[in-house]
Image (cartoon, rainbow, N blue to C red; front, side, top):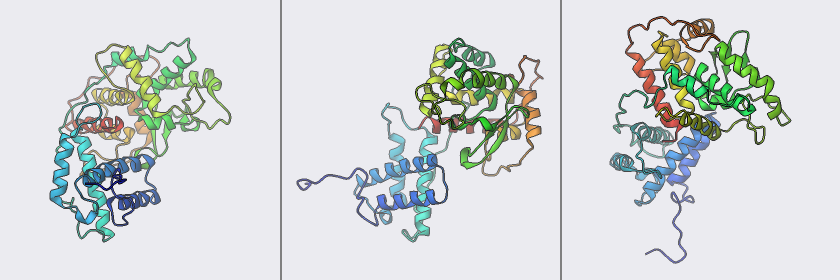
Length: 356
């Protein structure tokens, strides 16, 4: 029986210098010092906290108490775990949580906290290869982008936002961080600064997206700016700050739902659509991989840098909205086996973005 006045810690004994909680905090500090992104640190913290809470409930409070059989029990628990919505974790999400533990325990072994990594030989879930749940056709993309009220300044902003998402395949966070000086109209490119993995890249943007973004920047953005102007492209009407990630998701979801396509999604669905449509038009998977900012397609893939001029030429030839006027597209070639890998990678990204 618990003593009177005793209060069980949320995730363990934070006062134990050799406890799971303290060592998880030390590891997070280690990641910060080495320049990992806030998003990576937040995801890692969430994964470690969930494990620490699970372990504490079973009387386990120190890293040295964790063995491979215990981690296998945790893996089984993850399989049966249900989120607040009642939905299970996807296999991709389960795998991420276990991978975070594997890397953490590897670090603990290097710090001589544990004798060996108990997660080293843990058999991770097999993530099924599947196509995205909802892919918008070219016609459906146009339906969604036709919904904003262009007589409303915010409608013009939203149209420009969707055009940029579809043309460039930017991630939601990359769109939110986009600044005016990142756009090169003359070259028809956008510079993505510190994308996933804190890597910069330059991606093509079509004439149509540049047209709509130009209208927004000239006609609407000056009315949204609240001094000092920090140069972010897409601003919130409430406070003049860059649109928050949750707000971007809310806006895109509302438009897609309003289109009544029988499909659901938000910002990432445009990234899916862009990749799918360019593949169907014959874009080389390796070039599309470069545009999307995927470092590799698999653990054995070789990542080859290609010139932005070549990327721009391929983008113009294969993206259905690269030009202001529609053009005939070449017949698609036979599908490559690696296209499946690219679409699978996009689906895994979507799981992460949705917090699964």
